[in-house]
Length: 340
Image (cartoon, rainbow, N blue to C red; front, side, top):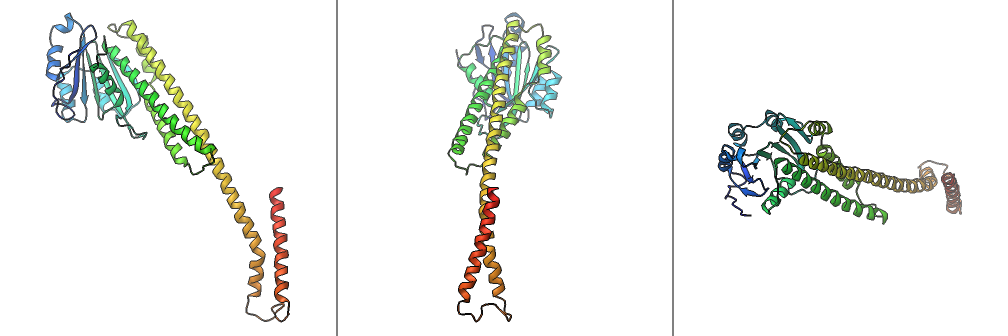
């Protein structure tokens, strides 16, 4: 496959386009720029030969939204979703166009809850438009697959491919998180209580955020699968249904990992509480054992007359005996209480 990728400026061209591909009816792609995409969409080849165009935009570019409104006939729901505060993953139907809001992790994902951003898609019969604010891992994997010659025969197949890539990314995250949890669990079993619960807490917050943002809304997808547009083939619908099921399996694994992290947090909290109780017990025993000598030393240290054994030749040893006796009695009482 020939790679005719134009030389872009940093991040995107003047229209905000990062890259674009024209897919032939046989599923092979050729790179093209925004002007070539417009010429193809306005030509008679669209109706006679078939195929579709995929354009990927950078929404951080100042002119992207304006260019999309002026040059492409996109769904109003798609434009509204670009400004909508709701970031839940969903695929819904607006007339004959699929509008998808997909959350994905950043390309340089570092297991931080903030490393998640949104990808917006408009999927029509002959045009697929995707837009993002920051580089995302799944869409970049899809681009690399297309450049390496992956066959994509329809626009919905491109969406299915993206969801498969996102599922693979999610599986990689679950594996990486599992490896981290395994390391923490090994340290816990080895009795190294210096492991901080904050590490597990951050991983658990990450998984909760990923599950909340990545889990697709079932109602919108159910409506799409029940009444799909006429141009979507049955094979593509089945692939979309299968990719959704695979994605839900990955989310189930993530939920199981959250439960495991919760149990580890409870185990660490129990061990920390037990260690604190032992330390408090030792401190209490020391305080109880030191109580008689402190009381007697305080009494004998008063500068008043009538201090007992002041003139007695064995007064010091008598006081020592009294202190030892009371200390022994206090120790016996304290240890007896702990055994009870």
